[in-house]
Image 1 (tube, rainbow, N blue to C red):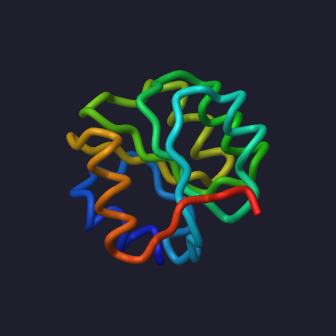
Image 2 (cartoon, rainbow, N blue to C red):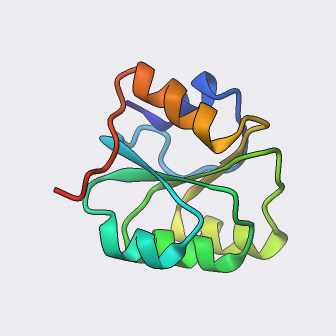
Length: 115
């Protein structure tokens, strides 16, 4: 699934564009960046409620091309600066994490099971 399709499905505002044609194979939803480091294994997007620079730094370390911030939270200017430098797409949606995951799963994007 392409990042642009994901943005459309969850009615997201895109703040920072990376490569919109990146093929996303799975999703990972978490607010603990240590879990992201431990469990993300595939070309995943990160769905989170955190809004701090560590989210983008973690995404970079794990080759995560897209971060979706839930519950209408706004990314910080520093997050956007780092994401732009690293080519990471950052978007937000008013939906809650559970809803975003359900929508993406129902449209064929599986969970990252760490395989």
